Amino acid sequence: MPPASPELISPRSPRVSAARRLARRNFRGKERLFLAEGPQAVREAAAYGGDTLVELFATVEAAERYADLVAEARTAGARVHLADEQVIADISTTVTPQGIVGVCRFVDTPFEEILAARPKLVAVLAHVRDPGNAGTVLRCADAAGAEAVVLTDASVDLYNPKAVRASVGSLFHLPVAVGVPVERAVAGLKDAGVRILAADGAGEDDLDDELDKGTMGGPTAWVFGNEAWGLPEETRALADAVVRVPIHGKAESLNLATAAAVCLYASARAQRASAGCRSVTGS
View 1 (cartoon, helix red, strand yellow):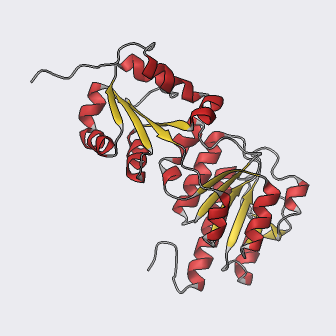
View 2 (tube, helix red, strand yellow):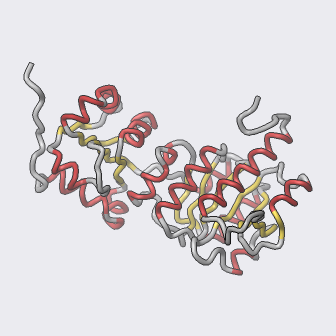
View 3 (tube, helix red, strand yellow):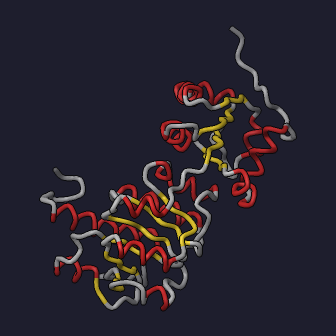
């Protein structure tokens, strides 16, 4: 059998043009579609269920390398297009495309549904503007066992291609609410019995002290702020406590994603300890 040939060889193809426009936020919002690049993200989209994965663009080489993924995409109902390498490069937003790009439907969850589930651990991105940081915090929340993530209306678009890539598939693993005003997010979580902790390098309370006091075993939402200037005073005032991660060495500070990982894992450990488990990974 002769080798397969790409069916899409022109960047001006209507299908390619439609996918390329999804790199822009206004088109994503209008179509309620976004791009998922790379085999891991596409695999998670296909496994998400329903008709989340709408289309799959792949080079002939990538389609052969990830033949199982192409089969999963077809089983999920996605239209599969073999495309020229230049076409994939035209759709992709990365410098070195991996040869496979999916078009997916939005997967965010209404905030009311998150509250109704009575979550025990939540990450609230209150003023996070960098998409790479947003995606990485989402991945950290997923890894720590958080049950939801909330992006406020002051934060970056969840479906920014860089945020999607940085989440490494975690976008499809846990409920994420978007566009929620921070005041509404905090009030709703408090009404659901969740304690609100604002993470800030100038916080009055020390994370180690919070752990020693045994106050972190209950339902908790961590509020994370802007990468450069942290949380504004009016947001800090909404929290039950403003907590800093202690710096034991000479580093000036921690970046947002690292601080978020420390805070979320501290809560995850405390919650599992109160439930009779020794650690996040232990049994």
